[in-house]
Image (cartoon, rainbow, N blue to C red; front, side):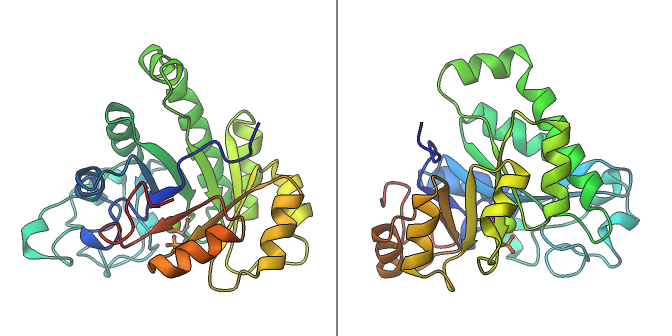
Length: 255
Ligand code: G3P
Ligand code: MG
């Protein structure tokens, strides 16, 4: 079996640069551009409920202040995650992970779920995201979707601790180690996490590294590729897939 049985082009943070990141509006935008594959970020609210957010501090995309773990999910999901992007998106809420999961299920969107722990919550975030994902995948409606060809999510993280916790909680789920630059001990890290793929920034990737990862039998995914010429270059190096902010320039069928 190939270690990358997934779509090759993903909309980064739901809808790339065309909609407020990590929202249902972003997923709808991705869909309207033909994307049935997305990456998004999941963090725990203070009450342990996972929400879809990138930053552990409020203020950039979410109107508010303080840290994500300072708020319960019910408080975060009342906050505006759209106005920063454009007035037309004002009132777009922070979604719970469960809402995003179910939207993707209904619309047959494949998910790369990036486990994005707030500092100090690495183990809890990895464990919770994996356990809930595995639980939802056993529901009859979800099992039917899987039988019909929809693929189970791939969990990735920069946090090795989160990946180890995810592995312990739901070993059957697919995992990927996420790196800014590929470290010298990448193979040991992948083995320890039971990962099937390596995710890395395209900026520091070399053709030799790409060849080594593929030679070792792993899937290879890059973030965040926004120029078509660069996308073609890394695909020629053997990169299996990437996410993009420019879903308008790089279509779902680009590869
Ligand atoms: O998962 C790939 C990519 O999203 C990692 O970086 O900061 O956009 O979450 P970031
Ligand atoms: Mg991400």
